[in-house]
Image (cartoon, rainbow over all chains, first blue to last red; front, side, top):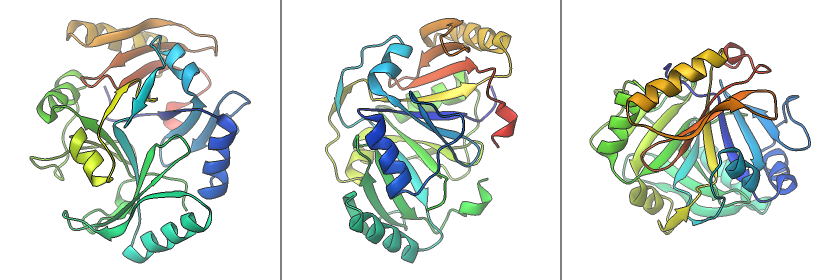
Length: 136
Length: 136
């Protein structure tokens, strides 16, 4: 099994609300693969997809009920601390929920968290030990 | 904000159990960035990280309680239907929980689901409309 993945699918309450978030708060552009039932965003080497949570659970043949912390986070690493501040200021101005204000953290980075409409966590952080451009 | 992400972090009950799963069932190799508290795997253009769930919630300054469907899935797309069958057979032999047996699905693909030790879903699927090698 190769060391890769193809798609991260977020099960969402409202496709329209989540599309608005990823396109109007993040400024991302939907892929042509999208249709009325699912939205795809081409990221670095993989796709992020938005799909109704009940439909995702049904596809996996499991129950859709779930509450509280979903147990995972996605990280967007920047190239500087300033970039973290600028992104968080922009999110604040657009009404995005800031879960954790940018701050120095124990591992040596500068980190903050925001929540998407379903409460999925995005860490917006500068990690001085991680060269963002070396990952791709 | 660029259309990318850097890290997917899975909050896990037991780091040792999850490391065993990703290394001995998936056959993946840990990155040098890893330490006793966190495991990183270099994937295509991003990192997958394993981190204790309580510590992840604490880092995000939220409550760690959560149950039921976490609401997301990760997908590993193959280059053929046969490859799906082969991977699932291999997982079955290694005692991995098969959530959905490989089958033709409504969108034209051939799909299955497995669960990692925390119940996080991996879809193992062939999508005839998606060229895996064009994503990276």
